[in-house]
Length: 389
Image (cartoon, rainbow, N blue to C red):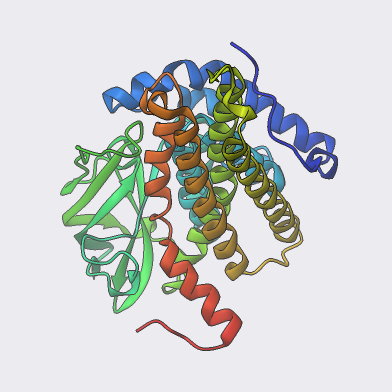
């Protein structure tokens, strides 16, 4: 197998610190050796390669930005982004797992949890000894999470939880769910453990996208949650929305990983596929497609780098995260479609990664805030006029 060399038209490597490049290269090697050889089989069979979880934990890829006192790597946000980029070059399902574990489970526990909750869960989640999921989206409330119906009622020293969540990555295999519910009309976070009576997490089947990812429903029927499982620092809808910012940041990087995989496949194919006595890379239309791809990948890389530097300085804004997620996923999807046209009929075969990435990106385009919702978020920011109904 030929080692993936990356896509770096503007020498963005020169903008990275040595430690960041080392992290990127380590994950790139991991993906090439451990993910690429098996992912098509898992995608075809609709199974998640759960054996990779511990390996990701050993490499420090789960919750990498959190402090070493919790068994985490203490990396910066650029390194985290590069991890997400390389994991999604393998498959969106692998990046989604790590993104949920890090940004949507470990982040709220670290940010809103008690010392006891942090000490109990963060080291296990970092090692891959425990798996988490994040329950916010409901069957009737996706883009409007504030309308959620899931609710908790205080009874003695416990909370009784009722409701349902949908489209939950890792749900069926999770040991703990970070669940958002209304308590006395205010959104609060709860840690719901796998063995809780009345809690079920059936896996959703029949997906044409993210087939190597576990996607689940979460159902709560009179679940009794111990008082100590309330995230004490959670306070209103802003709490889960801040978690989504972490996930969206990772997606912005991950989408570039998918785009690079598609571009690399298309470029190599175009240079080797002979038609009319010359490689199809010699034709103007093919070159125009390849130029579009590498241009948009380069723009996305620069967008991510600046956002990551701002994030490391605590100077970024959530609307900037929305722009990066919106832009990079949109163009990654366009790149995957163009790559498929270059590969022609071969583009639908799983001998090549293009169709799998294209199918996955259709989901990434929608989750963690749809393309249209991010458009309205940025629109409100630049005009000062809220267009939401």
